[in-house]
Image 1 (cartoon, rainbow over the protein chains, first blue to last red):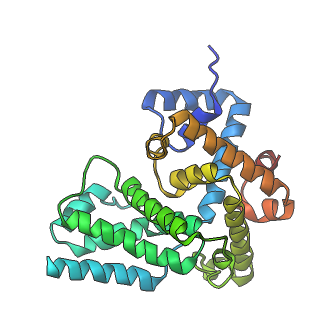
Image 2: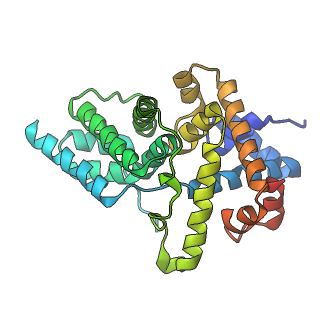
Image 3: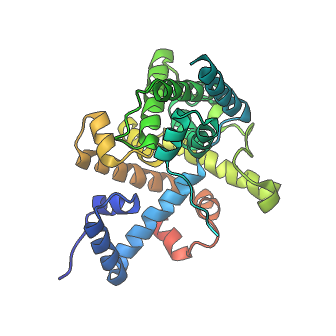
Length: 76
Length: 211
């Protein structure tokens, strides 16, 4: 039986949110449906692009948080 | 060989038991995601640094105060705190879009110059800066879901609960956020094709997402 998947379900798949059974169903479908695989690849590429936008705070801020935690421990 | 990393729950338990090193690991693991979540909302690097501190200070108080609820994921919880603080700040300041986010003053923040060379690193960072601009141009509801899901690590159900919509609405907003980003990126083919994706990505895939 050919099973169709909505874009929303694929989104939940690439973000690892589907229950195990549905996750497996999507994986099986991906192996046989080139269009579905291409759509999924698009989403994965978009994810990768969005990962590139991620920024880190300065070391000064990180140190300040750690210092606060140590101080809080002593006060508590 | 990959070494087993302790779970967030294990680190929290160790931290509450007095091991500061466990908190340092938690912070290292989550700070970039939380910082990005805040930065994409307030659009000001200095404000984002302050709010990141406020976020983790709240977390410290909750954990050390014995009020941390084990039920949810730490990553979602901390990002929800960050998101709320950032939204409050944004509303309070009635901030208009600022340039701070996309200047190149911190151009090499997350890049390894030794690995890819200064010029390539700069190009890549400019590309990422442009992508950040495009995210800012999304409709507010779409941007909110994208930030919460991708950087805040909140599930679509958690986002739906937090924003008072159905999960299908949250999923739909995410879908349209990605569609809109594609359209905007496709309008800038040089930026899109050469820089956004790693070189090993198959060209046919790049064309598909661009189209």
